[in-house]
Length: 88
Figure 1 (cartoon, helix red, strand yellow):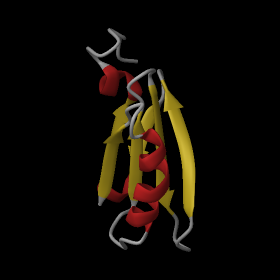
Figure 2 (tube, helix red, strand yellow):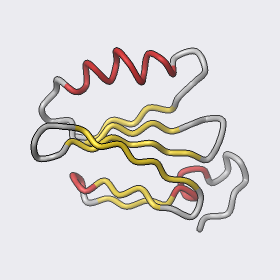
Figure 3 (cartoon, one colour):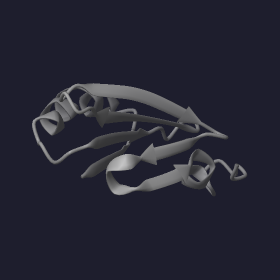
Figure 4 (cartoon, rainbow, N blue to C red):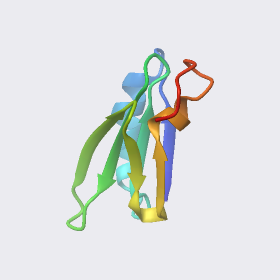
């Protein structure tokens, strides 16, 4: 399972803290994706085989790979029509 959150100024700390703490307890969650509303930035956590989580971030020109569901999407596509950025 993949959970995607669009961060807002008022909930960002909660999304990164208590909410992620809760999601980590759900065995089926394999990716937790945080999408910034203020800049073209996507951060995502991936559950590793040993149960630990790795963090990566992607910006324009990069792609987000969600291996658990066989999905790859460019950051430009995520933000298309948001900041009027061209897909790369």
